[in-house]
Image (tube, rainbow, N blue to C red; front, side):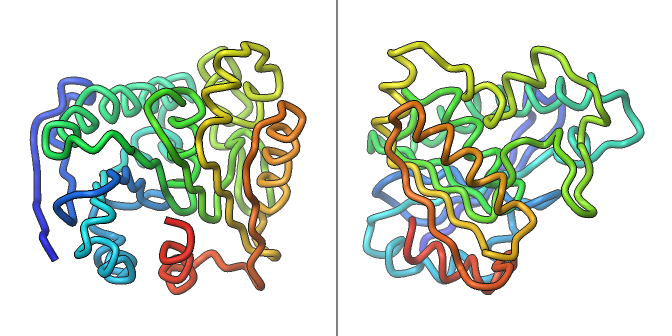
Length: 242
């Protein structure tokens, strides 16, 4: 399997960022790591290995991006206003630095946004905010409103709310979306949500599903047995849904 390592200084994040690329052609997959994860997690957990056939056959090229979750949503030492600001900087890094690199390496026009756990949030959020850039989005074990508490998963913005928060929580901003052009662009994407029946984020997935249904946006939701919020499940999920 072809594997490339890249590292450069990000002007948007003002720090060095790393990523791994697997494969040589096919649809480009921006693969966001799980909660507080790193760009090498999916390789270490053999999630990439589970996609080996699709990668080697030239169907998919995987771009495993890094995260700044410990500087944004999971940085309890800073004001929540900075947490969301840091997240916005991260999105700009993805759109203005990672995507141009991917397009330079691979001219395939199909771009998929995907992720597991908090990575699913990143994948779904960036795709819903910029649907013209993506043909498909896959959220595995995701949570789509980080301001809601569920079990031991707390509100990651500590009660803080402003327009930046609102427009980065899919279950909030999509509810009031009325722009027919944006709705049509979202509807053109292949939207796949996968969640375990015992996952604490099950309700979050169905809230998102109901919102999409009310907007007439086609999508699919798949429930798996148990909590299904571990790498051994994600290895199976990516083979089916990516």
